[in-house]
Image 1 (cartoon, rainbow, N blue to C red):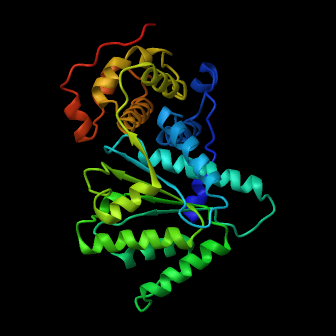
Image 2 (tube, rainbow, N blue to C red):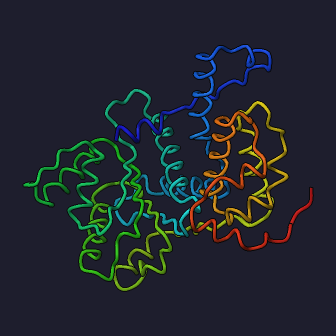
Image 3 (cartoon, rainbow, N blue to C red):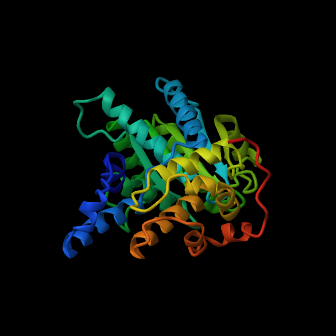
Length: 325
């Protein structure tokens, strides 16, 4: 929970670029400190409000309002898509938004935990999942604690602390085709019935994993809306994302518009995956500071390694331009 709280309250300081005169006059120690601040900043560039993030925040906000006074059969949301399409970023940004709204509604309340965020561990069992909930809430989990006690403690704390949003990431680690997976699904359903909150799930290719198959799957399909996350097409939205990322750079010699002019290349290089694009831009910015070039160029971008999935897409030609400039 401490990590989540740091995430929701963290407001990264945007370093101010010194004038050329001030920059060239920095001593060695001051230069190291100045560069370190910019390096740290580029490791976590501001999240771009993509169309997916806006859709998830809007849909999630609507569901939390609809569920606010629901006694049972609360509706939920599932994000599904290929790895790197921004699922985790979208759900965490929604969680951050929800937590800020909760603080605004209860400005003087203490001890509230409006958002619970857990990641399903690989080969999860019901006890493992319940333990993840308990760890987020700061509840001790001993080897002797049975699952019923853990679940009861989790539900009690969530009800007492005003939990109204539960985010479950990496749901593809649950397979309804196995007994353990089916039991994990039942445990999640039990949590959703006991905790008066909106549940949001994220997983890779939900329909291929059979989450909507069988009796359990039909129950999930009947209560959850689905938002599919896909690679960005080469269109205006992609151009806007690239322009926004370029605007956030803090490099001394970078020519504005360089990356926008490379948007076709960037789409080809990353396959339209927002995660790969973020990695590429952040990596190039860090390299530009380390090698003192202070600018991002096509040559520099070519030297940044990407994930295997993105590199495979690099052999395909970029799609035809669909908009004018």
